[in-house]
Length: 445
Image 1 (tube, rainbow, N blue to C red):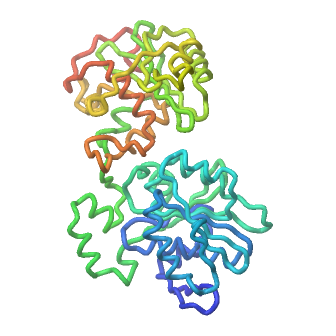
Image 2 (image 1 turned 90 degrees about the vertical axis):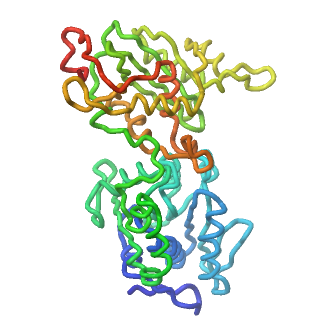
């Protein structure tokens, strides 16, 4: 059992064997996750404390999604471990200063744009508590703040989480499915290493078999399997459970000239902007055949880019969030006006959120096609990677349980529902299509 002594002659913190495995891991990125009650937050906090002691003048950052979560968990626990033992807590900065000049900071990122609070910062290590509550954009941007000029010092990312939440999908893709659990994965492009260390309640002798375990056993099945058993195959709160790569994702093919084409746009500057190109097949199947997904592109530049990408095509209309038609100030033009002046006239999309969500469900419905294989009225080209990545990750809003949580990465979804609200609701029974000659092998018919 690893024993870690906090500064001066304070009490000893003893790691469980699973926590010790996490503390001693050598990979660049490590996720300690799974069941609730595995001692994950304590392990993160002690990891950062030990690094501050070992590396004079170093800086570490520990993050939660919101400040209340941060305050009632990590900050309170740090006071129990460190208060009166050589380090000084500076409440106005939410940080600990150690005698050797090291700093341990606490931070939060409730919205995507909150990452820019850390734009000029440098940290030798960054820890994310409850990583699945963060978006992939937040994680990726904040990773860029993990850097150092200290010779011989490695920069490390550490995280802990339970399954579920707005980031369940991307966290699973990045850490859970890439290698056997507990084994090292090396990214072939960057050379960086990752590792997932599973945690279960039974790993924590202080909670296993007690009242907390009995409470978890009473949860509904999905929550029980996720929180008690650390099961990543269930996804409590997932909105579009019907999404299937087999039924919805296809390889690209040339869109026939006679098919109707249109676009849908969800504008963002700090957050990503997404534009989808869609086509209507002869059997009323909708094909999403192209996407543009960018951050930091102004309205005029985005419009010019969309026009250029559509050159040679006959596009019937472009649907956009009604919000872009509002004036940006007393005299300023709207985003929609700027786009029109740059060759991209837009029409207001139907922004009924609940009807739009239902329309997406309708088009995602999987049923037996005329050839006996599972199919749907929505097909997405495999090149539309951001729509494919983010759509199955969306979860329900905690305060509006019938709607999608807008804290998730919903930009491609918003564009999709704008596009589908331009189409009627669909029946789930497919008719024998009138297949255009010469394309039966490449359209999914």
